[in-house]
Length: 103
Image 1: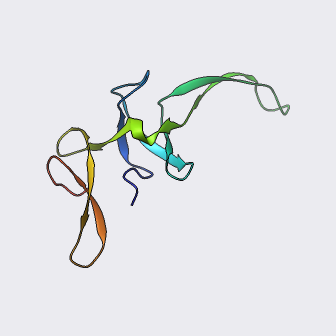
Image 2: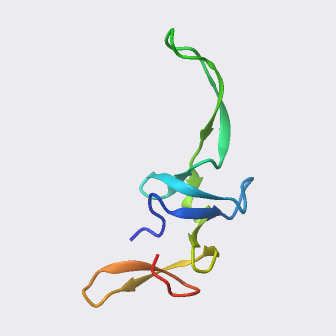
């Protein structure tokens, strides 16, 4: 079970965007890296490929290692560690390690 999934709200714990929060757009490299909306932005020089497209310098989101992300708990209002809990019917669910709230 992956601890961080698409559409989760996460906080970055290391790097230039430390402490900022964002929504996970996608998970890549078999779950080892994630792209977070509006964070870890880098400049890319893009040339005009068609007549109707503009060229120039654009900002794009680059992948962040999942080890540098923590899931944000709405109940605790802070980044928390994630645990797995097996339900009685055999399904697994993710829970907050602080308040045991299902994420």
